[in-house]
Length: 161
Length: 122
Image (cartoon, rainbow over all chains, first blue to last red; front, side, top):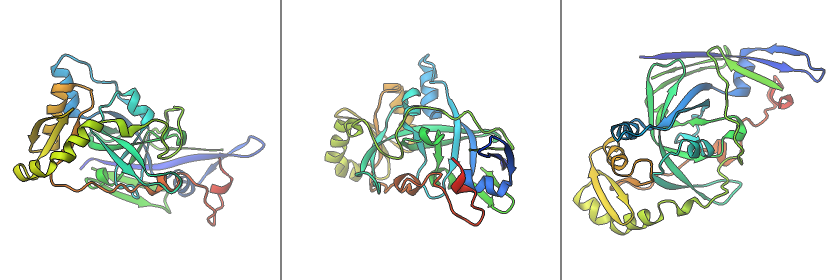
């Protein structure tokens, strides 16, 4: 089973500009379990485009946060537009701060750096993530095919697919 | 300021202008509006005929029913490329979406734990 272990390294910057390393446990608490990913159009769609002599959109790379609280994977809406992803549905998502909003559903595939496989997320929800420095929230629809081990004291986590 | 990166390289985040969470600036309810209305009008009869199969709908036309989501996506893309088309599983209730971190605006919210590290970072 392909396996990825990540230990976060971080440094804090003091008001005087000096930097110091922070412990991995604190880095993981502050940043969460993040991985580098490449996101593109779902592979069945990409194959059809290739068969028609069309070039699938170039995948976009960025940071994904593994979010066990999210029932579904979310992709940044601006990135979805850049990728020219086809919407395959619209769902309504409730929010505490806004009225329930309709969100597009996009079929995507995700490559996690360090894992030699491609993960399909055929019903990823659009959300505004870029302002948080994120391209993707990896939700439980993807995690249902993974084993996630979160070691807080050591400041590391492992993801197996 | 806190800069963090795992042992494997993490970085290169997209810097796209955006709002937070699920706030929208465009009317996404217009996307696939005809398809969803057509599906809602016919889903009962289709579900009786093809229970558990995935349908592809474009405009007011049922393109086909398929055994798997993969086949449905391939069928839709073979006809419409990167244009939008509706894919739903017959007989399946609409999924309830829960993303508390976004709905509550909690992504990377400052913490005030015993380490005190989160509250002073930006």
